[in-house]
Amino acid sequence: MNFGLTEEQQMVKDQVTKFAETQIKPIAAELDKTHRHPEEICRKLGEMGIMGVAVPTEYGGAGMDTVTYVLCMIAISKACASTGVIVSVNNSLYGFPVNTYGTEEQKKKFLPPVSGGKVEGCYALTEAGAGSDAGALACRAELKGNKYVVNGVKRFITNGNVASYCVLAATEDPAKGYKGVLNLVVDLKNTKGFSIGKIEEKMGILASGTAELVFEDAEVPVENLLGKPGQGFRQMLSGLDAGRIGIGSQACGIGKAALEDALNYAKERVQFGKPIVSFQAIQFKLADMATELEAAELLLLRAAWMEDHHLDYEKESAMAKMYASDVAMKAAIEGVQIFGGYGYCKEYPAERHMRDAKICQIYEGTNEIQRVVIARKLLSLR
Image (cartoon, rainbow, N blue to C red; front, top):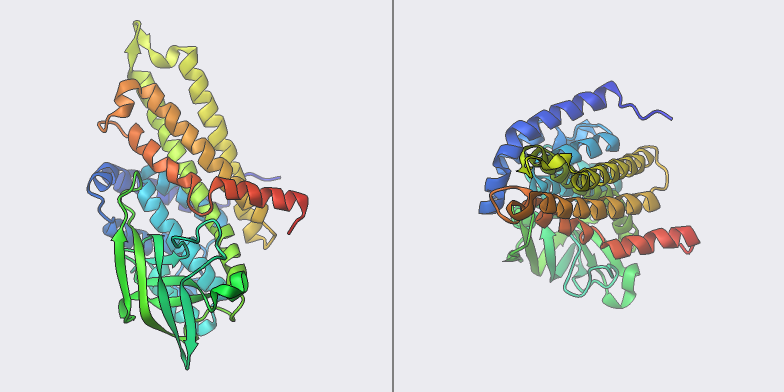
């Protein structure tokens, strides 16, 4: 069992960590305060190949592996959780399904702009009545001639306010349930009948836009269908498996930021004549945070390794996402506690980490759903 990184993996990790610490972290508080999309950072990450880490080079990506993707996501999210989720959506929720299920023509057309970091992509799944119940889609795509006519509203779409391209989950007929689900690649900037609806006001990840996508008799060419009708639900599930590795990595990065900031503060904060890090109560909090976050990272790296080796990683990705987001939230809460009153104030980043961490327990499948997935695999119900 070898836990060492390859020379290439270590080189990319070092490069991305340096970039995140010097270019992203210094503006993270400003991005959070202004809710500004970090476009300049996304373009630079694109030039580095990080907006399409595992996408082959012929389609604009870096042609690396999922393990490298995890390392990059942790480093970026440690610096800025909002930037982390933007990178995750480009790679996992948009890049993965197009690269995995797209035709050669589709991949050449729809991957390079997003994987090369020139524009953002998104995945439009969630609706008002279809969140955890992903098979209950109401957004309808009716085949008329050589086009699908789409009607419906998507909710809580990460990157939705800035994305140029979208993988859209819709249904041919709601009465068919999951058997009617299909996925279409949509050129949002050139599709009549598409508009951006409400932009959500959120608790955290404030530099990452979350929007409604509205389709009113929007016409999408039939050649933009991924795979065949009826295959969409399975495509969706495999895409979510991949996405959970990205969101788990985002959570792990947030937790590591909370730990690092709390540790540095505890060394400086003096009470009763000595730094509070000298007190066992604080030491135990830090020890638990560090142990749990390292365990989360190992779960994520295992799931990524399994994906890279084309193994069934559904259970492992669910475990990694669930555990990483739970311990990240715990670390963020303990970080605020270690900062004390200052942890509740925006002068320090502890409160931002706490706001950012919570969503990781919710999106990409709630942690309750992750436990359902894990239990089903254990009981061999699927």
